[in-house]
Length: 114
Length: 109
Image 1 (cartoon, rainbow over the protein chains, first blue to last red):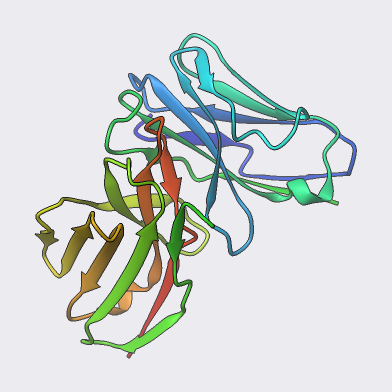
Image 2 (image 1 turned 90 degrees about the vertical axis):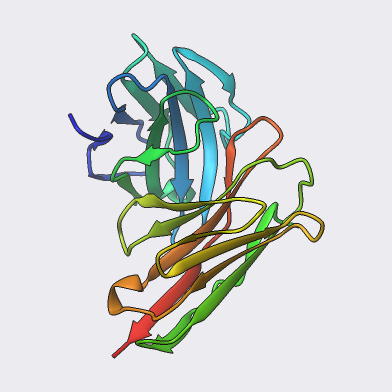
């Protein structure tokens, strides 16, 4: 694919349920990033991967959040026991490698927790 | 204090106007600086990098003042299509990008 893709594009779930968000980075990009953007707010860094390793998980809001990346490609962000405050747009980005100037963003997953 | 601070606006300007956005950052060790653009309900996209000597790309001019930890973006001859949110971005200690909350621009006919 030409760009970063994310699925699903929209997700509505009930409080307490688990959700999985998927990100397909640009082919050949070794670095992958997850951000969260709440309504009217800036991007909040969650976690990044260099290859399959996650050197910086400092942005994960709680232990209900986890992420993995396999094969140096696809990544999934899992939110367990969702809460209403988890409602946001979850954006994934990739870059050639960590620290490279340009991060290319996917269209995001809009999560609504009822 | 937020690591990157911007005036959220909105800035409402007529077509053809010149508008400037400012941004301050708290980490004096930041090495790289950028402006990203985000259209409504879309993902952010890189607009331009910001260099110490200042740089220009068409109608857009970016400036960096390391001593004051201040970044600016100037847009000349505003177009309707410039309406968007402009995100100031700096690198943190570990090299990851830190985003400001953005400044919203509305260009009106």
